[in-house]
Length: 371
Image (cartoon, rainbow, N blue to C red; front, side, top):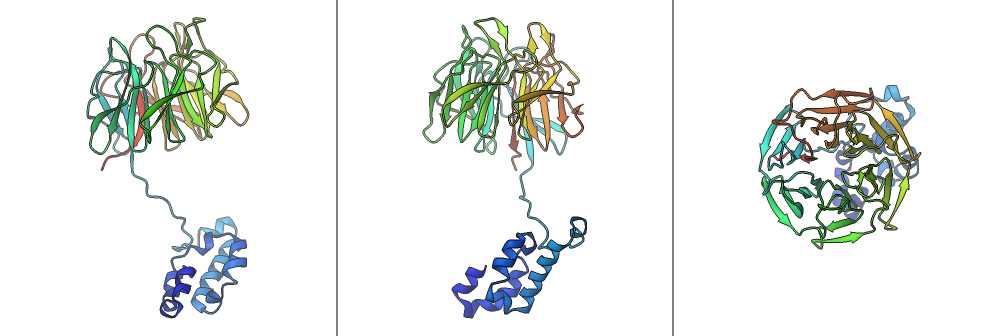
């Protein structure tokens, strides 16, 4: 604002008091107020502007509990006006691979259908990137696929982008530094350790470093610029896995971090408040309702409250400080219920409204609500 006035001081100086009214001086640091604002000649020479500076100083002198009594436009922090969000659930098994896609409106507590997938797809990786939903790989009821479908939320339309290099179902998918990663999975005969990344700028898939372990039914999450591959099934040892690997895109290397407390294949993996959650999953025939959370800062896992239901192959997303686990199966049937975890109360609660049908192996993401 000062720079704007100085650019044509003669014509613009008269507007200064009116403009100062809208500058949030109280939200600047004390040092900045004293060293920069107070030293500015244009402010010193104008009584109205000096009053705004005094208001700001006063704000800093008051204890926190009194500050909220100073209600002006200048003490109110700007909050970005974000679009309302909806949760999108893509494909899945019900009981076979389906094309259906439905959305949950958090504000209205209701489910509604959107455009079907171009073809049946379950066990896919689903992410939201740059305003679009990507459904990567999966199983169409007879074959593991390499294909990728992209959903335009505004047009309510699906289109196709180039396929991955490898067929992958039960893969993990995540977005890191504007690239879409497809991690592990099953190609129809063997579990995969390979990982590939899609660059929307070049519209191409390319391999990055493989994991140390083959992992199908793997869950992935991104925390602090690192990609984590959690549990899964290692076809070689025929074991469900408790191991976890971390990928650093800068060094293009995978390394092991702390193991989970239990083996989990088909766990629901999500990130909330910079921590990585692994919910449910199974070890052989045993389907779990237990949940554990990984803190990268301490490289430790800890247990949190159990879910209401045993679930494996469920979708997961996080929004508004809550972690949602969607559908899955309990070992005998597909679930239509959704539950969410509140870390503040360490409690799981069920959404009042179920999906239109039970589905496991569905992909889930949070998108801006189309206007």
